[in-house]
Figure 1 (cartoon, one colour):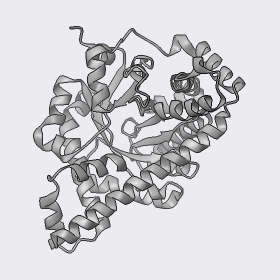
Figure 2 (figure 1 turned 90 degrees about the vertical axis):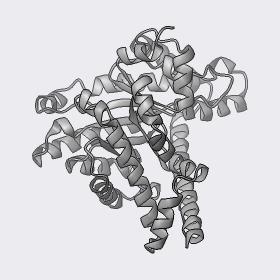
Figure 3 (figure 1 turned 60 degrees about the vertical axis):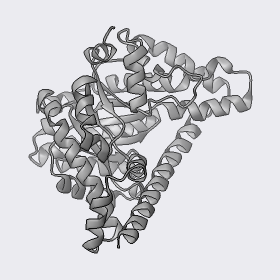
Length: 366
């Protein structure tokens, strides 16, 4: 059988797993995925941690220990999540070294409730970086308006950043501006720019979910269903190519900087009628990351269609799709505004559920 994951890697796409749990770490599953399925990175978020803690008993001994120490919920959550991420960083370290520090990354997110608080985000990003203490860590900061200066300041401090919850092209432009401004400050602060790296996590399937819902409400536009997510991401890559073709960027590159790679996030299909590998197959292009749920990873391995660059040759088609959506009455700016708010709200809800679960577990242990 053709090794489709090898083909994907050879096409310049880094395969990251969109999941982390203590079970994966303790059973060796994560190490196996790195060895056998070309996985070279891991992303986590509040929803992933909430799922991990609620589904297994592997956290029970640590919760009992923390309860015995009189730890409060916030401290317990910080210890539990950073321990998992630190251990994952150690598992991924060979991929980090082999890729010259580009891959082998593990991401941990600042508390989602800070999404609109610049100063608090920078403070927590620094604390997480110091607590985990591994060079292949990424701190996830949401690409909200208040997140942009936090991205700049965190990078200025020499801390690598994974910008999350990017949905729109204008929003993405601000994220790239924040990245470059951060590197300029990092250079002035004396940091090694080759190590101050970043990815920009552009969400895909949620765009289709929201726009498909609006198309269904208008009726008569079935030909546009399931087309927006890929088109939007392709135009994001076009924006990436244009942005990093400038004298300003070349000056940073000459000082050792590396481009902020686009990362395709939310690549598991939400609509079962769609091909389960579409957000991988249709977004193959060099110097990108695709972070997949394990189900999507195995689907690509089994029946993905990896046929070279599927982004650059389709810029005109993507623009035509977005124009057709506008003609069909889809308000793009409103879609993006709704998705950003919804994305933050979902993570806050998951974080609150995580806190509630740990509170209950601590009380039971006591």
